[in-house]
Structure formats: C-alpha cells, structure tokens
Amino acid sequence: MRISLTKFQCNIVLANPDLACLSEFLLKNKSLYTNCVVISDENVFHRFGNEIKPLIEGQGLSVHPIVLKPGEPSKTLDSVIRCWQEMQTQGSDRSSLVIGFGGGMVTDVAGFASACYMRGVDTVYIPTTLLGMVDAAIGGKSGVNLCKIKNLVGTLKHPRLVVVAPHYLKTLPPRELSSGLAEIIKAGMIWDGELFEFLEKHMEDILAKNPEKLKTIITKACKIKTDIVRADEKEHNVRAILNYGHTFAHAIEALTNYELYTHGEAVSIGMSCAAKVSRILGYVDDEFVKRQDNLCASAQLPVHLPPSICPDDMLRLMLHDKKTVKGKIKLIIPRRIGKVDQLHDVDPAVLCDALKLKGQD
Ligand SMILES: NC(=O)c1ccc[n+]([C@@H]2O[C@H](COP(=O)([O-])OP(=O)(O)OC[C@H]3O[C@@H](n4cnc5c(N)ncnc54)[C@H](O)[C@@H]3O)[C@@H](O)[C@H]2O)c1
Image 1: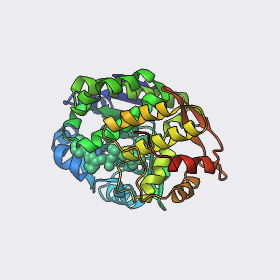
Image 2: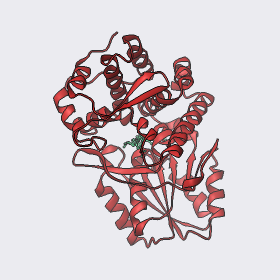
Image 3: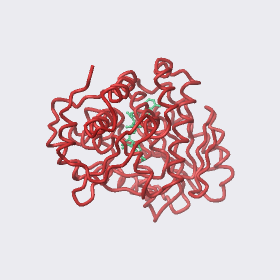
Image 4: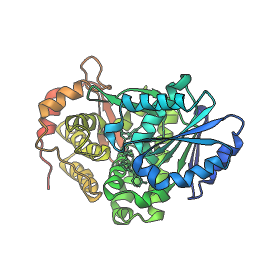
C-alpha cells in the first residue's frame, strides 16, 4: 500500500519491519533537516526506541527523544508545552523534523507541538497502535483535551509521511487491538459494507493477529480515511461522517476521566447509541442495531453505557462538543451498512431515549 495525499504532500506507506520507506524519505530529504525530535511514550520508546534511532542516525541526523507517560491523561497542553521547551533547549529550529512514534495520543501531541513550533516544522508519524495506523495518524488533525472537552485545541496539518508498520502490533495488548477495531468497524459502517462483512467473517483470525487479515483491514481502512479526507479536508461536508459514534464517545470519555475506557471502547458504545437514535427515528430496525452490537462485542468491545453515566450528564457534555453549534447537536446516524447520514438538529429527547434504551440480547 502506498497512498498519496498529493495535495497535502503526504504519503502513507505500508512498511516492512526494516522501515525502508523511512530511510528513503530521510535520504531523499537530507538537505532539508538538521536534526530529528522523536516524540514517543514510555511503552513504545522503551520497546522500540533502539530500533529506530540507528535508522535516523544512519542518515546523519541526531535524535532527541521526548518520552511521555503513556495513555490519554498525557494528551494535555502540559505535554505540548514540555515538547516545545525541550525542543528549544535541544536547539531545534525550523529545519528540525519531528517524528511522532506511538499511538494516537503520541501522534496527536506530536502533531500539535510540531505544527506550532516556530510556526510549523515537518512531521513524520510512525503509528504503533492499530487505531493510530488506520485513523489517528491520517488526515492531519491533531490536538489535546482541555476543560474536560476532547480535542478542544488543536491544528490541521498533515505529516509528510505516515509509516504504517503492522509488525508493531505484535506487542499491542488485546484491549488496544480491540480499540483500533472499533474505528475499523466504524469505517465499514460509514463507507464500505464489504469491510463490515469481512470483519464479521474473520474476527477470530483478526483477534489472533493473523498478519494477512490485519494487512487487509488496515489497507482498506487507510484507503477509506484518505478517500474521505481527500474529498473534504476541512470537514465542510463528507468528512463529518468520520465522527460516527464520536459525539457520544467524547462525552463518555470525559465523564469517565479518560480512564475507564479506551478511545475505541467509547466509540463502540457511541456507535451503539447512534444506531439506537436511528432506530427510534425509524431509519433502521432492532436487527440492525443488534448486528452492529454483535460485531463490536465479537471484537471484545463494550456496547452499553456504564450505570455510572447519567443520560442528563451525557447530554450536557454533548451540547459542549466541538461539533455542536448554537446548541444544535449534529449527529451521524446509520441508514444501512456502509451508509450514514448527518442530522443537523437532533431533538435532545430522542437522544435521551436512545441513551436509556437497553440493548437486545
Ligand atoms: N487525530 C485524529 O484524527 C484522531 C483520530 C482517532 C483517534 N485519535 C486519538 O487517538 C487517541 C487514541 O489513540 P490510541 O488508541 O492509539 O491510544 P494510545 O496512544 O494511548 O495508546 C494506547 C496504549 O498502547 C500502548 N502502545 C502503543 N503502541 C504499542 C505497541 N506497539 N505495543 C505495546 N503497547 C503499545 C501505549 O503506550 C498506550 O498505553 C485518542 O486520544 C483519540 O482522540 C485521533
């Protein structure tokens, strides 16, 4: 797989464990960069830092690591400020290259830090989670959480290269694999019914990390995301469908302090809520909601809201989501597998009913 987002000068490449595409990129752009800042997290850098350092140094660039604590609680302005301060102390300038090496938390922080440092330096992402490979590293969005609001501040700037190297998934914990599967199920539901059916058929192999099956779903999901971003980078229309399940998910993550669920788990519950809204409005039937829930459950993902979350609190937070304008909640709802629509002013009473609706077993 080699996908070019030519307009944004960004290539997304399926890489072998030798990361040859990274070496080629560094060789080709040798004259542009003076040093390299690798932003990562402890889990990733302690495991794989020694593998990528020689690749970069082999191209004549010094490596300055900035290693964050793992997990969503690190997706903060404090982390970004730390990156800027360390970059400044280490002597980074406008010709420094930032490499975001880790999951979506890392690429979001690295993307934001690099987009603002001296008004923007180039970035390469090497995503190491499934979610990072198929979603977070693609599309140019980055940002951090603030005031209990997910991604409240951020930027839109594409990396020059995304190195998608599935061998990193070997060490990914099962729960994080499932988290990435939520975004791939989402991709199938919003755009590609065949992908959805492939997931239904091969979930056991996928959970066992069968390399061929993983490559198939990663390639399909990357293509879906890039097709959508190419069509509508700034989210004026079609890109909004990528938010399927996310308005609920962001509220769930915030209400559980970004600790109880992974992002993908919250998205899975959010997609179930969105399907229930569609069911209440009469666009889909119970069978449809059950089919999506079953696929998520087969990927070891939760689909029900935890009892600790009160629907009224959810609604309050959803009213503060970035996508909500003048108190009007926008929502992506499914019409059939592979097709969703955007509603522009959803009646909060319908949302409340959907949040209270129990799943069908
Ligand atoms: N910018 C975007 O367009 C976009 C899109 C989707 C999601 N996101 C964001 O991505 C974030 C979630 O990303 P995530 O799910 O990758 O979480 P994450 O980055 O927090 O990583 C999850 C865990 O996996 C560990 N890990 C990473 N790679 C590993 C590996 N190869 N082996 C073992 N452990 C590894 C990490 O250290 C961490 O503990 C959320 O903040 C979400 O908002 C952004």
